[in-house]
Length: 220
Image 1 (cartoon, rainbow, N blue to C red):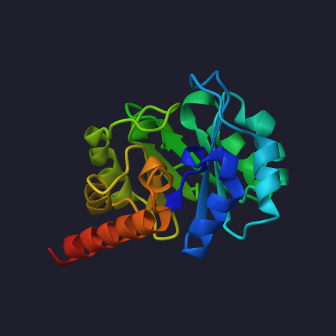
Image 2 (image 1 turned 90 degrees about the vertical axis):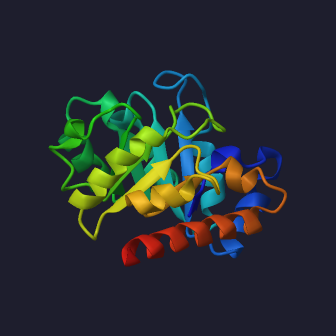
């Protein structure tokens, strides 16, 4: 599980991060939006930097921005352990992968709902993570796009054991099982965790549903 900071109560940000961390969350998903690549602005370097000294979680920065090459270093210096960029914004993905690695971070590539796997063929074998968007990026609380599960399944069959297959968008108790069956192993959830009265209980429920579906699939 990778709780998404975007859905947290920003008036109680550290408190909410601490709650899920103490409950066993190992990854904090950081949705960075620039108002250009996506029609919204979220948060940036100062927020990540302020949380870094107070959390041991793996900081997973999802850069929904038009210039990841320009800004990746600032996010790594702020404390991001991992940088995921969108394939839609670069014509030289290998150069971007190399740049992010040179900063000391692991690297992922993201596909929008209608972006084909063919767009990442040249770097599929060399990234640490592939993120499949199951909503259009830019806003939380959107409905899950089930058509992307075919993409998830194909990627799961082609990726190595050392790589992570992440899904983001509309993940909740009704959708996480099908995403797990398709092959996703890392699940970004925002409103389904932070939007609930008890974020810990909500996160644990999602984890159980994902694990149960994956186990059932492996036995079938």
